[in-house]
Length: 263
Image (tube, rainbow, N blue to C red; front, side, top):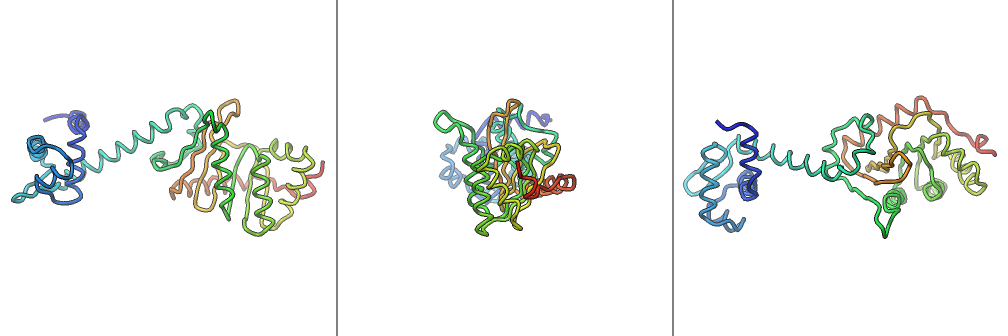
């Protein structure tokens, strides 16, 4: 009997095998129907179906074929493995910058995430993605090392006109930076004085994350603070993790009042 690794190799070695097995988990097919659907020759289909029958992954009833319970199990497991590898490939270049200890959720939930990285034409593409999400959100909760001018402007405007509620937890340096600029200081003072907003300072931030309505967005920076990527997802398990993370940090946060903004 072949080992599990040999069985995986057998299936992975041929995209035709993968395609045929997947189709047979979805519906019954005759060989002519499979040939029309896949473009695979009758001779090749005969070998594939024979190999699958030898492994009891497929059963034949007259002229039709369908996957067995174990065939569906194999197909589902192989699809999950493909999803894992695809997710790993997308995140591979970011691994040195991911706060792995803080991301206490299954990274497979990032399989369908939107990943934006800087380009020569758009070096600020990750930040622009976040600002785009921020501008369209009505309920925002954030933990971040920074609170830049563009984000502050969007939040202050939307909170003031009643189209956003905002909860922000920031590093002390972020608030100090805004206090040092007269124009930004006024915007921040207006924001913290609004009942629809809460701004607080926390001592330790191990991951920057923002919940924008149903979307969770991460800004990934390197050790020099250079923005490497934004990752956003609507996956519910990631959203649940982010909410719990923010709630935990909130218990030790120090709320910023309008009087605290004075220079």
